[in-house]
Length: 88
Image 1 (spheres, rainbow, N blue to C red):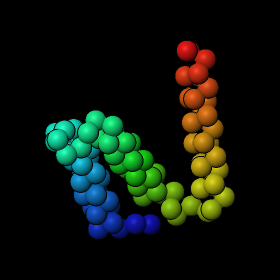
Image 2: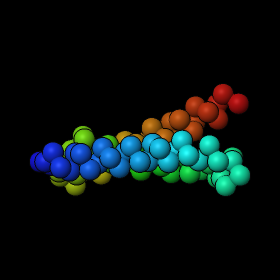
Image 3: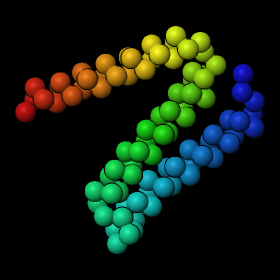
Image 4: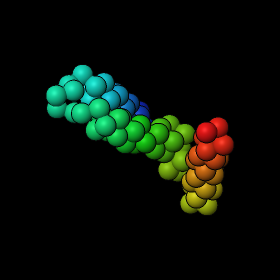
């Protein structure tokens, strides 16, 4: 199990990533809107992986459970895409 130092480090990284998402939209002359949206999505994915890996202890689980979670996330993604397609 991870110790307090690891949790603190991950928390600081999450704060920095959250600040990065804010910075993308505060400097439109450096980051155009499309780049800011793309960067925000990438940072959000990184944050999700850190939270699932460390705070939900997915890193310490057997690989089979990790793969099962990956397949479940992929299926939810497909379902979201299908629902968005059916609304159009």
